[in-house]
Image 1 (cartoon, rainbow, N blue to C red):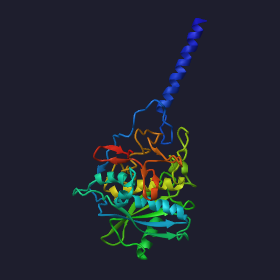
Image 2: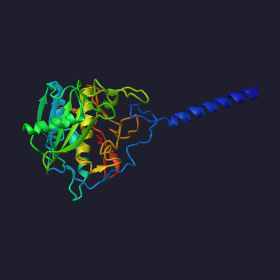
Image 3: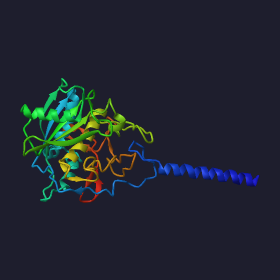
Image 4: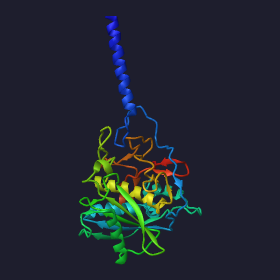
Length: 331
């Protein structure tokens, strides 16, 4: 009986070792995974280093934002997004009594400097906005259509030609955009408007109906990886997800506007200021856990910065070229 028990114990031990080994090599996800009581090491630090490729940055003096609302957005939803852009204006931050603010987060972008030593502009302002509620390019559009929408708005004098600004096309939940929800939650690019002038444009869509599990984490349960509860969005799942993705694209466009700025890897699929820090929103973040966040007692919404009109927002960690870490705002 002793030999049999020893054999059984040996088999159980080998089975346990096998299970632990499989878990160790299993791919990590950025899905929400509540942090255990025993503190795991923080992964906010990173070995990623974004190389500067000597191209221009958006150094200002102000990065003007031009918005095209493509498809129907409710007044409430438009206000949430507009409040986020307003929150990037340092003058708005001065009027807020609570810290940290959205402009506190954006201050990290000023650590990025061009070949002359000039930093990315610390001032971002919503300059103009127009609506396209009649789906002028249809409800199923290509990435090229995003550029066409911006070109038409400039040609019709709705927007000025502004090589130091960013033209954002925000698509409603019922609009399908090429590659959106299929490996991309937003993108930025540029095109020539004259033989000597180039402008930067970008797209972010509302992922709530199409792909919350891919483009709305941590406010939605991920489509892969260990399951866990989603965080409560302080405003709404769709709009708060758009804010995270707008912040991601905005940082990338400012620090790598022409694909010759700061990035790592292939210029056509680069790691940029925020995409180099995936899934990191607060201190002690690690894959599957967004980090320590504040929680509003009234709404139970999780956030990390305050914004205009008393809004609470979640902004992602940004790679800091000074400390060589993924920097997050800390209350």
